[in-house]
Amino acid sequence: MLRKDIDDLQKRYQASERRCEELVMQVPESTRPLLRQIEAMQEATARKADAWDEAERSLNLQLQLNLQDAEAKAAAAEEKERSVNEHLSKTLSRINVLEAQISCLKTEQTQLSKSLEKERQRASESRQDYLALKEEADTHKGHVHQLEEEMKKLKRKHKLEMQETLTQHNLLQQVSFVAHQHFITC
Image (cartoon, rainbow, N blue to C red; front, side, top):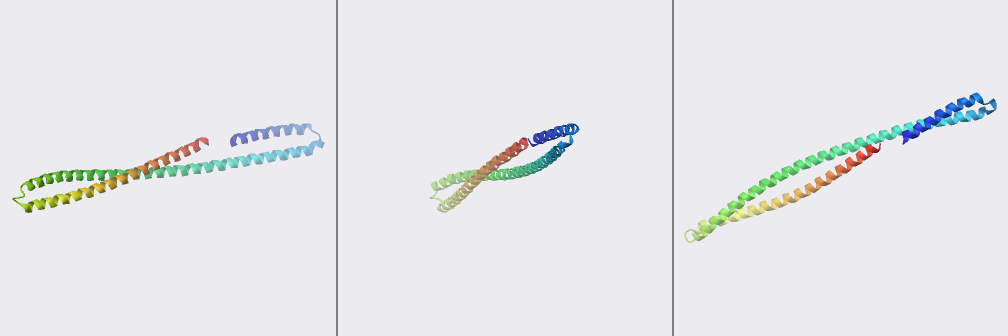
């Protein structure tokens, strides 16, 4: 828009110059003050055209700086997203390990429970063995419960991190869209 206005002003200025030269040739001495006034107007028009050029350069520079800033923010957001995704991957791996441990402990608990039941049947033979196995089963049960609680905490943490990643991803898309729109308008 500024370029069009400047071009328009320059064309008008050049046309005025030509008319002025033609008039100078045709007009008597009495119209010289009018010619000086026309020259002054032409000079003012030229100054305005220079001012428009400077304004356009300034706006283009500001636009370029804004675009660079938006690109830097987008790159930072992408790096943050990559880091969060890496952390989430590690968390998921830890959850998988814990789930495998829980599964093993549950299997072991099941086996111990079966052994305990057999020992109960043989309680008349060895009350002391029965109590030892029961104690071991209870210990494993507590450990399983502790691991299940840890897994629940990790799942909650994972859910929050996923929400944060989604929020950052949406912000990145908005920043990219605004930068793209700003670039297109210029």
